[in-house]
Image (cartoon, rainbow, N blue to C red; front, top):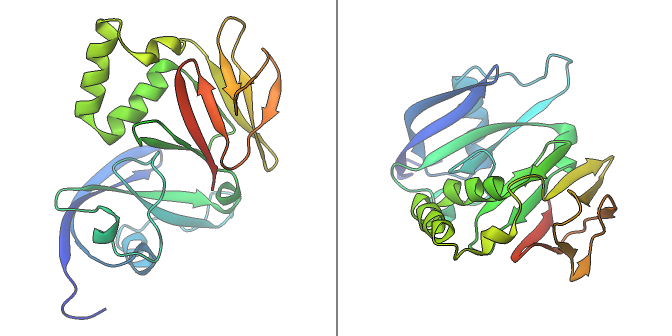
Length: 212
């Protein structure tokens, strides 16, 4: 750290006993790996779970569901600007091996850390809204005009993405919806393994799968 290191005014978000907290701060433009210890200490955040399991933290830009910032790259090099929203996200050691990143056609991303996540049209639109409110409003207009590819995604459970031990899998939500993995149909109720680089298609919406 040098005296010439720039500061970036941002809003920092975190969760405390499940409740969202936020604070405007002047954040040094440093790599996350050089900031995390200071941020965790200043906010008096726990470093272990109630069961004594170790907790570590990551920084995410825009929303806690987004992919974490690269540990060794400057914040500004990763798109952090004045008035950005940064999330300080707690990660249990076991969760580091259990994350599935979905990338939508417009570049929107969401990380799944839960044991199971139901994918619906609303869920995908919420992911878009996290990245760009303008893109979300445009898609809503297309839906109202019946001119959106998201009409091919069910409002109910289109599919379920879950993890068993260290293996991510997808299950078609129900009969009557179209789920393809690498252009092969996923039969209703079948559990099919997801691998890094796979292409999952729900109706006309293609999702890129990254296991991180």
